[in-house]
Every structure is written in structure tokens, then in C-alpha cells.
Image 1 (cartoon, rainbow over the protein chains, first blue to last red):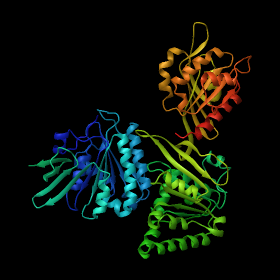
Image 2 (spheres, chains in turn purple, green):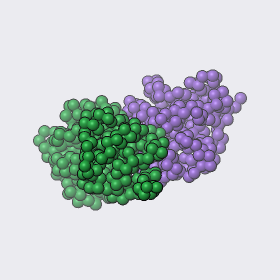
Image 3 (cartoon, rainbow over the protein chains, first blue to last red):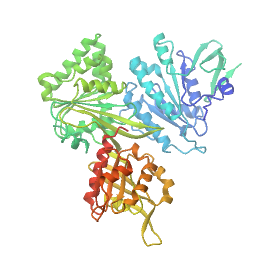
Length: 235
Length: 387
């Protein structure tokens, strides 16, 4: 069975990574490095692909960010729910698909399927180390925005469908949510869909993370930093 | 009457959607089914109908741009008038009206005024956000009712996150006159998309599912694989050749001078609005190991028998088992029935152990009309089969 390396040494060294079909929720306050942590976990390794739903950054800026973080852009597809709001006539490419707004769950679902199909059909630039089924990491950046546009119950139902599909595809999901903006009920409902929860906090001496849901992995706060799209734990 | 603009669906519905009816396209998440609504919008506008489009999920400009991307048609240039109530209307109502009942009333007044002012013939509603804002019953109350209902046709697109229970409710409470649900057979990836005609109030029609593909701004009803199998020399290659508009046959002469298929026959045809691919298997037992591979992902099987060779029925049964034919729609065609023969239906049913509902046709594969009759029966069974 394929195992996804998370880039978090605590998980990768103890468990060898995480299993296909897993879903990781990052709970991070605003102004923290939670988003960067998400992109570090999403980073596609050799032979893998990554898909991102962006509700925050335009795809054009996101692709620049990937270049600066030295992520393999050829292996990344983007569902952009931001650009059409300002540029309605923008058209899809093989790797970038646009939806009308973050409220357009119909469009998001369709573009997700379309990108997955493109990967399976070999329409993304070829990789030297092709694997089958192609391992895919799907990152939603962010649930915070989606929850501003759609009701909790609706989003829960939608994510339930997405997580089932990820499981069938033997892919993994990564989601980020600002835990300061929502009540306990929202957090608890979202956690129901997840296998792993990574909490993030910002303190004066740096950023810290805490991992829940991976047996055998210590649950203490650990300091971390991200650099060039990779993550480093600081002892 | 308005047409959906999708060949095959309009034919099944008896030339389209009657005036004053309510239609819902219920989309499973992740399935490219937006074209059903958009094709219907374009079709209504082409027929010079005036349309009100309620699209609370995006601005009017984005909506027109998406229509243009998906249909390759600028719907604002068509003959009918399109009035769009877009996301700015929703934002305005939601910021102005704080109570759900007031929001509902604001929408209702706006839709009624628009219908009257622009002599609207068809109301198109993107339903999910109205459902979310108002709840199901209040959102349904926005659709034309009473005297207005007789004049205005309503077409709704809804992202169905509740599955079959919502569709059952729509059908059992007669909320819609036509319910079409749109799905994907999803394995590792979407294998194929299909729609199910769940309910039609104006015609007696069985629930049926039909695969489709989207090509160049059109929805083509699609059957990716029908298998023709049967014993050696039962006429499979002739059948495939006469069924198809075009095709390839990989035949070789054997030592006795007969032609035999060494890999497969392949044929393509466009039949009653369907794009169909037909695969003919070889009949020689030495090719048996490839049959399970050929049958993979098939949607139906036609078993061809030779009416003059009752002794080949045992081999036919072997092929049926190899192809797992009992799990798929199956039709039996008894070829060469224009020649003297003794094989009868009871004997076939007995030896092949067939269910009573599996049809048996006595045909000559040399006659295109016979072959098309069998294909028509196969298509009909595929469209009724719950994949």
C-alpha cells in the first residue's frame, strides 16, 4: 500500500507517513503559518500530484508562490474560486479550472472531477516516476472561506461526498480552518470527517504544532518553521 | 412546449417539456451535469421564449461567460429575452431582509413582477442557495403556482447533497412533473456519467438510466461497450458489420478456407440519439482467455446463436458463463433462422437456463433491419438496467 509522506518528521519517522484515504484538518488561528503548513503537507513528491481549491489567492499568484517555494508546478492543479469575481471571462486550462465563487459547490465538485480525470488520463505533464493509481493530495484552502459562503450542514454534506471520493481514489485530503472564527459545534462537526488534526499556535518565540489522531506520535506542542515549501521541526 | 435541446431526451419525452410543467435536474456532486439546464435555456431562447434565470450563486456576467464556455453559444444573442436575477439580488435581499419569511416574500414579489413585466414563458432556477437561505418548502413556494403555473414552465437545477431521499420526496409529493437525476459511475475516476429519468407526470414511462458524454457543447447519449458473443461461425462478424456505421474486423482465413475472427470485431454506430461502440468476441475456444477482458466495463451482451446448430448451445452456455452475462442486460439473437432449422425458444431457454424476461429473437444477420431490431432491444434493456 502506498504511504503519503507528510513532511512532518514526527509522523513520517514513526508511522512512515499516512495512509491513502486519510483526511488532515489543520486548525490554525489567523496570522499563523497554518496555511504554509498546509502547502508543505500538500507538496507533491516524485510521481504524485496535488490539487488545490483556493478561496483566498488567485491561481496566477498561487502558481508564483509555488515557484518561489520550489514546488513542482507541473504536478499541481488548481480550482480557483477567486479570479472569476474580477475577471468573468477567464477560461479553464488543463491545470487551472475556474469556478464562479466559493459558494458554487456545483462548480467546485465538477472541476475537482475534471482535474482528477485529467491526471488519470495522463493530461498533466508526464512524470519520470509514474505510479498507478496516481497518488493525489487535495488541499482546501480554506474551509474558513467556504463556511462564510455556505451553511455548516451543507458544507458538511459536500465534504462528506468529497472525502468518500478521495478514499476511493486512494488520495488524501488536507483542510485548513481558522479555529478562532467558529464555535465548538462547527469544529466538532468538521473533525468528524477527519483522521488527523494538527493544531497550530503562534507565540513570541515561533510557531508550534500539535498532532492528534496518529497513534504512537507524541501529542505535545512542537516548534516548527516552513522554508521553501518544506517543514522543519525545531527541537 | 419547450425542448431540452438534447437529442434523445426530447424524443423520449414526446418532443419536449409541456407548457406549465415543473422540471428538476438533480445533480450529484462532481458530475458535469450543468449542460442539461444550460441546453434547455438555450433551446427555449432559440424558440423565442422569454426566460427569467434565477442564478443566486454568481453575477449575471459570470453566468453568461459560463454559458458561453459550456455551450459555445452566447445566449444573450439568441431570439428570446433573458432576464437574470443574480447574486447581487440575493445579497441585496439578504442584507435588507433579516427574517426568512421576509426574504421569501421579497423573492416571490420580485419573481412575480419580473414574470409579468417581461412576459416570461420559462423560469429557470438554480435552487441550492435558495434552498439554503429559505428552507425547502419556502424555496419551493417561489416556483409559479395557481393560474400562473399553467402559463409558465419552470426548470430547476439543484445540487443534491441528500441523495435518493430528496428525489423520492419530489416524486411522491408531485412537486415536479419531470425529475431527471444526473450521476456518475465512479470507480477510481468517473467511469461514465449517466442520467436517470426518475419520474414523468405526463407519460407512462419506466424509470430508466442512460449514460452520456459531453462533446463540443453537446450532450450525446452514450453506450461505451456492447459485447456480441457466440459460438464459432454463428455470424458475429456479420452482425457487427451490419449493425455498425463504421468498424474494423480482424479476420484471418483458416485451413478450411473459412474466415475466423482472431482478436475482436469493433463497430461504431449512431442509433436513435445514442453513440454506441460494439465489440465482437472471437468464437474459437483458444481465444477464451481474452473474453473476460473484452467484457470488462461492458453495458450489455448480445449472445448470437446459430439456428442450424443446436449442438452449439452447450458452447454458447460456456461463453455466457465466461462473460458473466447473467449480471448484465442480455439479449439472445438466433441467427440463420431464415434457413431450415429445428432450434426452438423452449430448448434455448432450457439449455442456457435463461430467465423469462430475457428476450430471444430469431433473425438473419444478413438483414440490417433484423440486426437493428436486436440492437434496439439491447439499448432499451440498457436504459432500464440499474447500473
